[in-house]
Image (tube, rainbow, N blue to C red; front, side):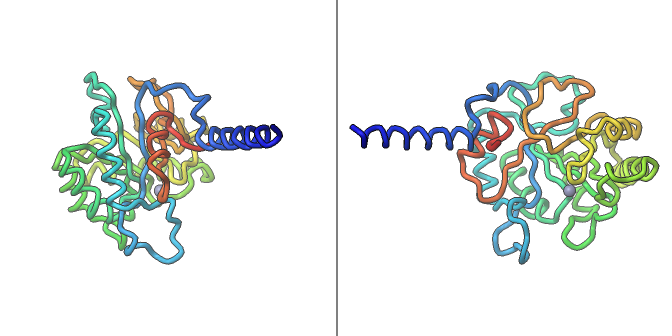
Length: 257
Ligand SMILES: [Zn+2]
């Protein structure tokens, strides 16, 4: 009898640990736009020493995630779909921060293979530098109609910690450079380090610089259609996570507390 009680307590503790880990019991069910945040997509052999692998997913795992979303009938949308007024059912947006060369090498072929859209946030002064793709490659991706670009700042600095005039410069100048080079309106800004997405003062600067949308690192889902003036939340699939983590992120916008 005593053993049964001990086993019961043990199983109960496991259940509590599991539910805390995956938070499935207190978050409302999916009903809106899910936006995923990625950084590097590359094979393990390309990882640098000491690199934080939470920011890297292998092309194989990434493709599996794409296939999962397609199997669930999600529609991959780009930035243009946020302003088109078209009714899109079951929208999902995959975003990539920083503009790494591996996005061109490994993500773009997968986008073409499945005919799906993605969004990349560019650091205006890093394009073409070692580790980042070039303007020409950016234009090639844009021309395919599968990739739309937003700004990730002029120099990837924490704009929340900057003087307002310097922050405004980061916001405005990056937009001007990207629009000139890409010959395309840039409607979205993504906060470097996620800094500013919860700060009214910073968000005001973003709007004043002419951006219609700001992408934060707050976890969760977004209403769909989007509500004006609300920062966009993103789910963050990390390297080394399980498929269950990804499924939960798809439904809840997060898989952990
Ligand atoms: Zn970044």
